[in-house]
Structure formats: C-alpha cells, structure tokens
Image 1 (cartoon, rainbow, N blue to C red):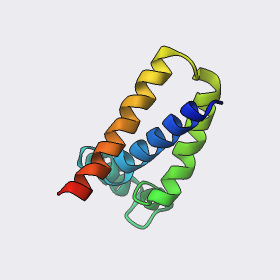
Image 2 (image 1 turned 180 degrees about the vertical axis):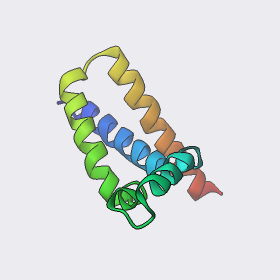
Image 3 (image 1 turned 90 degrees about the vertical axis):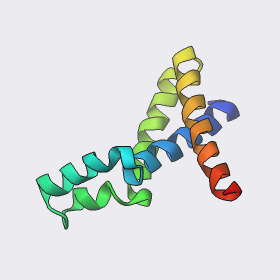
Length: 95
C-alpha cells in the first residue's frame, strides 16, 4: 500500500464514518436501527458512535485498499470521499 493509497483510505474512512453516525442523509437508517433493535441496543449505539463505527469502516477500507488499490474506481471513490471530508472540515473552520 502506497502512502497516497493509505491517505485516501483514511479520508474515505473518516467520511463514511461521519456519514453513518452524523449525516442527516443517514438519519433514517439510524432511526430504523433504533426502531428495529431498540434505542438502548448495541447496534443502535454502534451506528451513533463514531469511534465504534470507524473500526468497522476502517477494517473494510483496509481490505478494499489491499484488494482494489491502483484501480481507477478505487482512486476516484476514495478521492471523492476524502475531498468531501476535507471540504466539511474546511467549512467548519471558515464559517
């Protein structure tokens, strides 16, 4: 794994984790999990805990990086996710 692939994977992990745990677009998913398994369930906690979710997203990204690194699809997807995450960070600092 090259440094660039690693950094893109980190950015993608950050963005996907934020999407699952905080993003308004995934609120319906989090509500569905809470409704299906209960507000106090471990799964409900998982989808609202960034630290917890990042372990699973990071593990998946590591496997995808080893299996797909160097492909155009991997580069485009991880670059887009990383740039999205960086834009979110920048908007917090600039606003």
